[in-house]
Image (cartoon, rainbow, N blue to C red; front, side, top):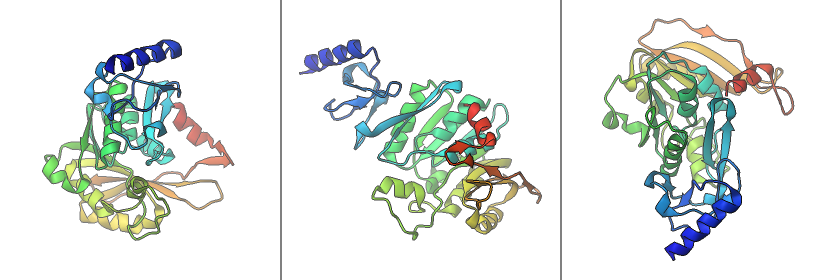
Length: 299
């Protein structure tokens, strides 16, 4: 049986001129999407390192986002939570000094550290994710983009950072946390999506507390959230010795209300905040603004 699978895999590779990179841990019973071509290929478990073997409920739902300018491909499961423009905005908003160490809380499939690893001179990123399947895909993304020396993926709980890591290890912490309260209406049947969008497994205070614990004095926490929760954000920052230093509202159109806020909190800093010009996403329906185009041109 194994020899037949191997033969079939080689035939698919020759016919489609592609490398098979994704495998199903349940013994190659299905077809999987190649991250570069979007076509389907069978693969051979025996010729793929263990780190490439990820067990997914719906492997055929895997898709890829590419960032050609920085030679980055990010795999994600469409049946689970997929990153959006907010992840790109926070990766662009965050600043890290040369040689700095960065922690990303709730990394999902690793999009924020992946983008930052390609565009900054930080020495190392630690990506923490509680959902096992997402952390597995994040690990796959790190290895497929040859970033193993720069990014470590940890499967663990934000609320357990004190057991997982030593304090004050980070120069920068980033997070794109769940925006909605746990008791908000959940309209999605996918529990993975609900966890990513709602404060089911962690809340704002858990994230801010973890960031403060990890940060060195004068280190920065960069987060994207909802503007209607700004008062709560400011209070929670203060509680954990973070001072809001930079804030930028984000709105869909020039005549619409803000729907997101980018914010930097600095540990043990003095009180003074810089308000950046509002970032408008679209200049017309389906067309990005010049500001957003400039962000995407980096990638």
